[in-house]
Image (cartoon, rainbow, N blue to C red; front, side):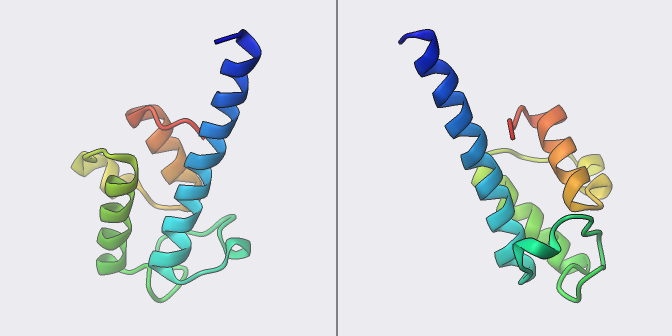
Length: 93
């Protein structure tokens, strides 16, 4: 595959991962995309302890990963989640 094709594929993969991440948040927590920037644990009614585990389960399924307990606990915001998935599970956004 030519170098240009590889770069375009990576761009598509990044977009797909971000779209999947956004969709997991929006559907699990019943929020709009506009609410995601700066969204933190317990900012919305459905992001309580049960909602948190539902979100984690959804992300584990979408990205085919099994998150460590420490990462689940540290997953405290929309932005922090992207950082954890990127740094610890090789999810590219």
